[in-house]
Image (cartoon, rainbow, N blue to C red):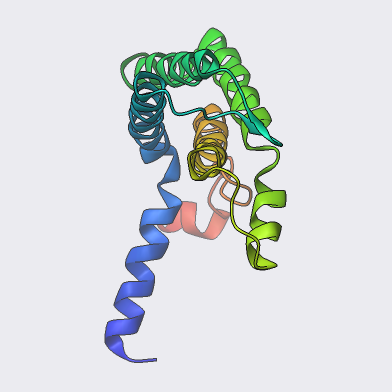
Length: 166
């Protein structure tokens, strides 16, 4: 491995280990994007809830806007106030809503890999955005916990020889 590769690997590792610091900011950014996507689809009449031969009522697109707005408010509140118990519960609720929305994403990916087209590209984009949001919201809800193996040990007394030497 060259020196440049080692440097890049070290930077990537350092950035990834600081995920509790950037998870809430990424969740806010996602929420703004998701709410904006839902708003654009709702105002243009594009249905995001496509099932079979009939499109869902485009009025249900406002639910996507509501989920994005709630996620934006809750994630933004985590930044100045920290992860309070009520905020954690709200993050898990919004995460659950995003998981429900993204539930059939796997079936859409399978149909695309088998050569069939997507029924609705807006619906597929909605499911993909919801999957990303579910991951970011869950990461934000767990951001106050240290990753495994990084727990701090209790300080111990120095050996007697060291104590005498000092």
